[in-house]
Image (cartoon, rainbow, N blue to C red; front, side, top):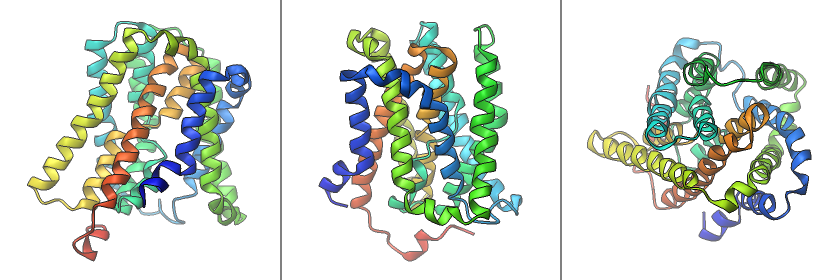
Length: 314
């Protein structure tokens, strides 16, 4: 993948466009706000179609990957975000946003990115699926533990629960049963890019005044976002080199441990709480964007030493 292709990829251009348009032309923010639940629902529905038929029929074979996924996404990255927030953030609104980031599962981006980085396909899929199943338990627990004294609109939470859990499962199975998944797969990238454009435009437009003011909290959140990605990446690369762990395994763990579903966290924050609570998700998403570009550059210089590294370990 050439340098030009990396920067001119449609998803990258749309992300930058969403940020710029949100800052310069925020007039469509009310419309984007209404479209947040449908955009999140479509994103999760399309993502569920990536799992092959019968993928969940043998849960024992998926257990190891699911445990690794929850370990990296929640125990490592989630705890690092919470601990950093305790020491750095004093504003309640930003604290809510950071707790939501810690509580959500990994980004949808890790599935296609894992293929580009020659990651362990089975580990990525099982880790991704395991974290989304784990989120059904861990997300409410994290919310109760850290947000129990903050007023919450439970009617909006119920709507989001139905929209983001029930409907994607039903619609994805309908699509598979009626063979719509083959057609959807051809346009998957464009569908996801459009949904993410809506989400990040909404997050930026609703926080444009905050971004222009550039309070110290934004700098602290930026430091936290960079530090979390940097230290986890450094630790995994050193562990992989010291213990001779395959490139594919390290790549999958790296994605599971550094990329959260910031669109989901920001959408929930904006829909249930307030504009400022969505700001941390926007900041973290910028660092995920930069991290994904760096990983693609790194992948260009990697040539697997053997075909065995492309095969998931038994």
